[in-house]
Amino acid sequence: MSIQSLKSILVLDAITCAGIFLVALLAAVPIASLLGLPVIVVTLAGWICLASAALMAVVATQQLPSAALTKLIVAGNLGWVAASFAVLAAFAGQMTAIGMALVIAQALAVLVFAFLEARGASALGRVAALS
Image 1 (tube, helix red, strand yellow):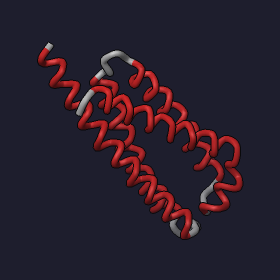
Image 2 (cartoon, rainbow, N blue to C red):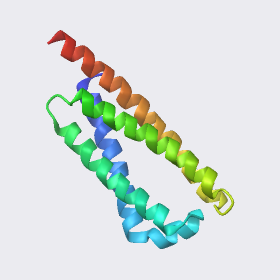
Image 3 (tube, rainbow, N blue to C red):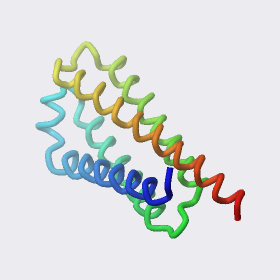
């Protein structure tokens, strides 16, 4: 994977995280109702996404993205996937079908980001070894 490809993936991940933050900030109550989740879960998810987006944006703008920070982003994304399934387990009895489908779909999308970013981190390691 090229460095430019990794940067593009990080930017796309940051944009999606920022979008989730904005939706959670501006529409937490209706989103929580649509998903069948407590408002606090939606709100916390939004704030976590804001912090994640900021880190992703910083790494994406580095001339040579930090391999360590890229790996931190991968770990965070894997943590998000695990937390998503924990939310499903904890709130399955009250979640709507749309809520369950959306939580699963976004967890799988984040897993794809984690995979691609892990490949990028591995490529960064090879670049560092050649330098």
